[in-house]
Image 1 (cartoon, one colour):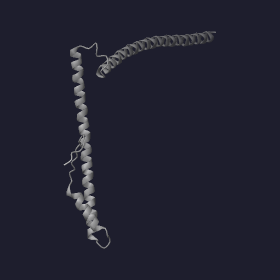
Image 2: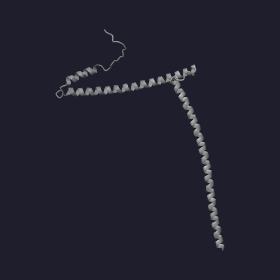
Image 3: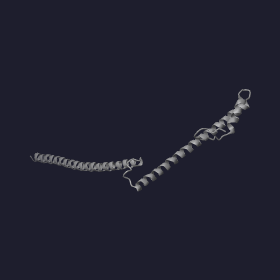
Length: 166
């Protein structure tokens, strides 16, 4: 019987250990769930505050945009209108500088292309002049080349009104 009683005690202590382990797991999961809920609530609160801040910023940007567009200026003081004007002048200056830079880049690109085409034209003309028997149009090519190489600068002007008669 002592064996049976030892075995029973062993089984009871094993059951007790398993029950204790289950209770510990329950407590940990309950604690984890409470912590999770607390963290989730804090996160939701933070996101709500951030949303409110963003809504305020959007409203301020919309008001600023309306003022820059010339709307809602009735409530602006002289100083505010002056600041808006200065800001618009700075913006316009920046836009004009960028536009000028783009035009300069485009001019440089076109000038490089012009040089390349002139070089190619000169090579073709030299090739035509070097082989007079193969081409019958070489006098015409020479005339075209001399006309195109006479002036590399083109002057343009815009005149408004009727042309003047000389």
